[in-house]
Amino acid sequence: MRQKILMMGPIPAAQMQELEENYTVTRLWQEDDPEQALAAMRHDVTAIVSTAFGRVSGKLIHALPNLEIISHFGVGYDSIDVAAARQRGVVVTNTPDVLTDDTADMGMALTLAVFRRIVEGDIYARSGQWIKKGPMPLGRALRGRTMGIIGMGRIGQAVARRAAAFGLQIAYTGRSRKDGLTQAYYPDVKALAAAADILMICCAYTPETHHLVGMPVLKALGREGVVVNIARGKIIDEQALIDALQSGLIAGAGLDVFDNEPDVPSSLCRLDNVVLQPQQGSATQETRAAMAQLVVDNLRLYFEKAEVLTPV
Ligand code: 8YV
Image (cartoon, rainbow, N blue to C red; front, side, top):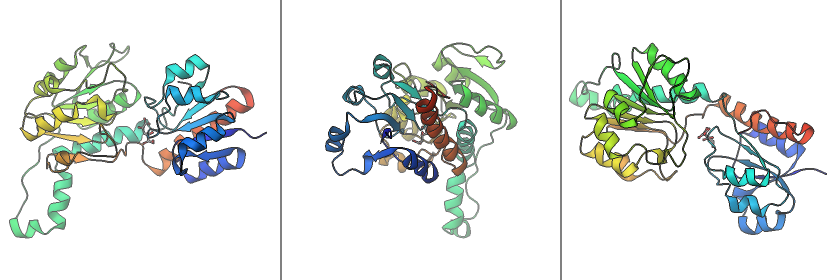
């Protein structure tokens, strides 16, 4: 009998097709009445494919008595109640490594965009302001500044390698000092912010990192400082960030993630000193295909051999 897969959101077409060829797939986000669809199939579902945008709650996990595996499309799995999955013996997998480089590239792209005013410059050139007003106001150089990285995991380290090539000094914070890393370690995020010009957020979203970057950290970062977030919106206290940007307490921000996606606060959209992206860190054709393939391969291996490639 074919395994029944509950999909919480879309993955690229080629891997979607592969899933549909091998399993019975329900696209929950396209159901007219998702509650009713779930109730009708809850005893049949053996696997969930989840994305960052469809929460896999403990309630959902417990409502599916034959669920065996959650194959998540993404490296960050804060949208899944992993404790509830473990309690039920449900395997959870994610997609690390394949998205590291693109996400790190986004961190540098946002940093450069803020310092060199890339988006403002694009608007200036397109809108004819260059002709009307002459050269636009100057940006700021990156070289010689210090980047403070919150979360020196795979993505944080990939950002650090890129930042070093741009002439930046690196410091970091995290749960502990990482063996083999020579960059300055700050156990305290406020001390890191005080030492940094750019605060680069790369850590996982957990109860410990909720609103980790709030007003005290932003004050410590200071008037020349820039915040870049390529991790999760809720790591920043968004209202504090907006207040700090509006009042000039910090110089700017590059944001790929927000507190209540896809709703981006209009007060952020009105600011010139921020560059915004609709969660594009892993959003290249190559990386999304590799992530989706890992989702499919984890499922296949699990159902064939009770093994997985990338367990959480
Ligand atoms: C999302 C991400 O998975 O990997 C993560 O944790 O946030 C992204 O790569 C992607 O937006 C698809 O949901």
